[in-house]
Image (cartoon, rainbow, N blue to C red; front, side, top):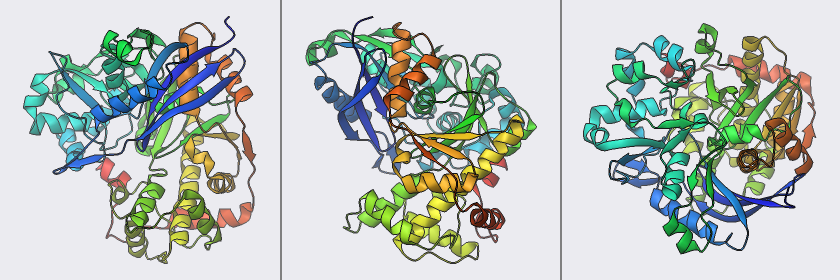
Length: 502
């Protein structure tokens, strides 16, 4: 094997996109962030869009910064559910719409008029969230039928950018499984659900496995950037799937928490788990690497923190995360709690006010300053993680001994410790850049530099610092957890899980 191989991971997130150069020498991987750019939503009239053309140009800037390196391949990863539509002339019909746009309000109920909730779950095994691709498509079928009629192919976000750079239209397996249009038992798109909702099956792309070489960099891009026509690989293209591929875990009694804008908590299983208990608890089966599924739950995550920070900074105040963390640590513990899944927190807006309103409606003390609001978020997230972990153990009938946390959220060491306290289990945090590492290591498997995911995880353990957190003050946290479980809305608000089930 050559002494070193270089790969490019384009990691697209809800807050930022990064072009990352990964240097792999066979034993360790070193990541270099070459370019970072803001993503976020752009509101035009009453719709929130992703600015895909700007993202394309920013990615090219990142590739230009890598043109002095000998690159073996490139791959793209992103969040799920959102997509772009391509017409028969290979044109993008409109900028992709942001999942936090209000167009999917009421679409789940509209869907269930034609396909019962139980049938949707039986055929897809997917968690019910109004942001899912299925409900976005249903909205388009009702309100923009001309766009669906003009469309030749639907491409999830990472697949869309892979197409922009290679010209090949495919959807990688891990992304396809997040749409709620995929049937994991039939290993393909759910023709039954699409037909019942009158969503054209012809627009659904070919599905390829993680680690498939789908094409090469398009000639005009290679010429413009003065780089070779390197292979374009469909990695584990859903960002969480890539992150889980890089979890440095051993054995079977572990769970993962991918901590970022969203928190995704679950475990790896060999086949989808679809039954009434899973439906009741609103868990999901998403594709993973090496013929696995990620049995998990989506939790609102650090979006709550990000929106609070945005709100406070909109008044001209500069607030680095480090300063907010200091205020959080000083605030009184267990003053009040929120349910991070409450539907009121889904949309952009004045998050501090939303949290205060929630506490008011639930007859709790109302947090009045930044520190107490942040502490409320952190403790509530930690307790939500425990609730999900307990359900995970119950449904799988297997004890979990350790929680591996990966992603940007591990930089908040305070939250990592709170999580260990709440779940009363060991927490291993790292790596921060799990998604990029997983993206690149799946590329290395595709090009023959690695033989398996097991080997890739060993590489991660050799390459990055891991921090272990042990639970503290468990008696105090146990008492507070019971309070958290018992806090209820008084009728003036509605939890998100109730909206999704009715």
